[in-house]
Length: 110
Image (cartoon, rainbow, N blue to C red; front, side, top):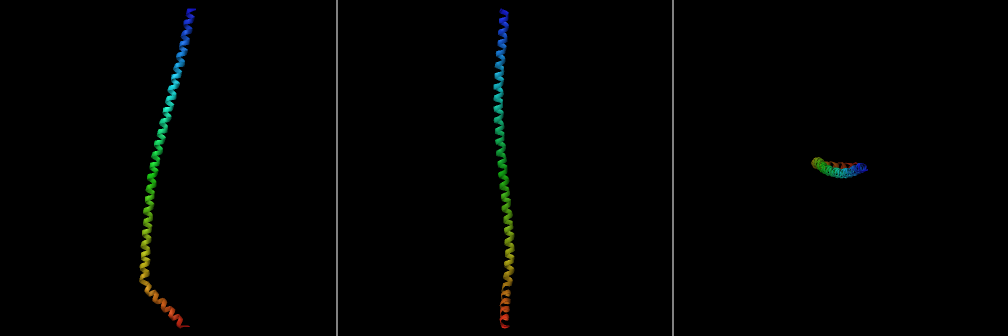
């Protein structure tokens, strides 16, 4: 019976060690999974921050481009207005005299 007890004890020992090894492996796997999830979260946050910064730079650049384009359009409009005002200033006296003459001539015909 001694041999049988010895063999049974060895089997029980092996079973106990197998359970311990399994538990250790499960704990290591859990630790690795948590560490991996944390690393993925860090990478996602880093990528998100990088994307936000890039988007902010692009937005600022586009706003500056829009301001420059708006200023260019306003400057062109100012130049055209100045040309129109200059042309009007040149001809307003002659135009006023002509209108007055037409009004006076028109009233003489009646």
